[in-house]
Image (cartoon, rainbow, N blue to C red; front, side):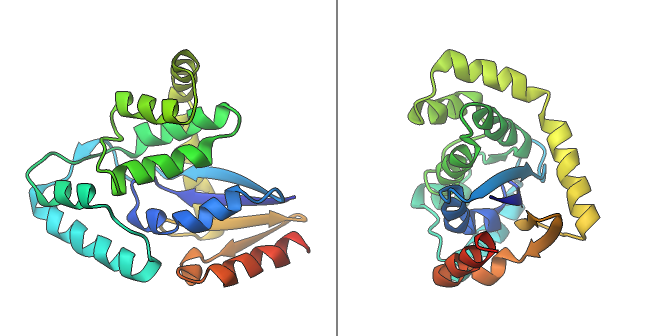
Length: 208
């Protein structure tokens, strides 16, 4: 079993660009995928002056990674509708889902899809409850997990920052492989649009 530490932020566009790569790891039985949320953005609406910058950046991400940004999301950013980003509430939901049968990676995927493709308000507790329900999580169990995870968010974010500092990592997404007492950084961006090379990398690492 290979321990893979994925350092990300739910509101990071480049992390959405890496979503298919991460999903393949979460489905690999020889990999223990550990999620480390980064706390990039405190809850706040994006400024109107920043909207065109975001759309341009998202086009670059789409071009380089092959990920599709949904029309509902693009229309929302381009309009005068409020777009609120909250790395901490979304991280709380991911930590809560991880408590429930290790479903953190699945919640991350659904938050990214909900935000970047469906234009949903993933900062909202009701929306996150809907995502959990779509995953088959019962409402009471979800609320209990969210309550527990509320106290875990800042320690998790602080741990992420310490991990990044210790290994000289900057920005999201970042990744570390922990194997046989050794740590190795993986440059995720090298594998955008290169699924075969990504699979070959992990085949090599899991057989080491």
